[in-house]
Amino acid sequence: MEGSSLTVLGIPGSLRRDSFNLSLIERAAALAPEGVDFDIFGQLGAIPHFNQDSEGERTPSAVLDLRRRIDAADAILIATPEYNSSIPGVLKNALDWASRPPGESVLADKPAAVVGASPGRYGAIRAQAEVRKVLGAIGAAVLEQELAVPRAHEILAAPGATEAAEIERDLAAMVMALARLAGVPARAKLSDAVAYSRECQRLAAAG
Ligand code: FNR
Image 1: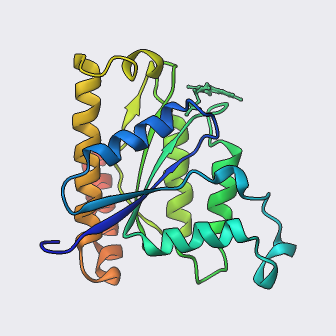
Image 2: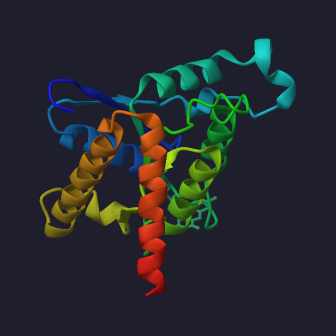
């Protein structure tokens, strides 16, 4: 990683103007170490509903823009809200578009991490798990760590308080882990490393 810079594409999974998840992506960008630049994709609302009849030459320009920016990024960081215990439709829709065409997805082997914020008690952990599952199905190299911001309306509104400082520390660590993952030179080796890490975690959980 020395001497070269990495670009992380931050994708907030909310269209809401005062989104807590957009705020989380903006904080991650502000906390990124030197050599890690953020591009923030704030156009999920411009992406039409996925339609297999609109693929190929008919692919909408907003989708082409999303794919181009994922492709240009060394890694992606998604901040997902939780709707009815799951992924917001706009985010799932964008991931479905980005998963195409089969065998040529810009997300294949792309280093990815997921965080989430919610005013509720659990910080969108169920949605985060589902986003990781979807990214894994597409073939991205997904960090297993989660970062949950519960009571986002309180914690994010009080920067400098202990809980906000802890979130910022964890967010900075997540960006570092993502940058390290993206810094591995060979993409093929990256998939191997992620598979190995998953197997270690599985064995550890099995005792
Ligand atoms: C929610 N919200 C919510 N929160 C949660 O923690 N678990 C949930 O299952 C749900 N379900 C849910 C469904 C629907 C349709 C809406 C609109 C909202 C609340 C949600 O966390 C809250 O609106 C956040 O502010 C959304 O994230 P942003 O927009 O602030 O990033």
